[in-house]
Structures are given as structure tokens and as C-alpha cells.
Image (cartoon, rainbow, N blue to C red):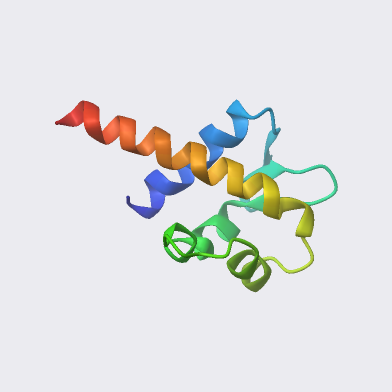
Amino acid sequence: MTQDKFIDAIFAAARSKGYPIENSRNGKQIDFGHKKLHEEHLRQLYPAILAEDAHIPTPIERVAPGRPCSHKPMREILAIAKTLWTAQEANRI
């Protein structure tokens, strides 16, 4: 998965879970209520967060400290994004 496809899949998955996607000066961002993760955060999370053994809070805290409310939703969003990406790749074969 390329970085751009990763970001697109994350936003699509977040939207499917009902999280608002907003535009900001840093590009698009996912609104988790009190905290947000924007495109630059997602770029910095790639590819570490895709590792099978990735502990989701660790890379998030590295690039966007103080956003613990995003950890659980990002686990769910990441699982959906991986499914979306896998389905897209399977359709190309």
C-alpha cells in the first residue's frame, strides 16, 4: 500500500464509521471529538502503523501526543482500511 492509498483508505474508513472529515490548513483531518488527526499525522504514521505487531498507541503518541481518544477508533479505522485496500487490490487482479 502506498502512502497516498493508505491515507485515502484511512479517510474512507473513518467516514464509514461516522467520524467527521474536515478540511484544515494541514489538509483533511479526522475529528475524534476533542482531538483530531490530520493528513500530516497520517503521513508520519505510515508505514509503521501497518506492521502486524504494531501497538497502535505507540506510533500515534510519537506523531500526535496527547490524543489517547484516537487510539481505539484508529484500531477500528485501520482494520476497515486494510479490508478496503485488500478488496481493491483483489479487484485489480
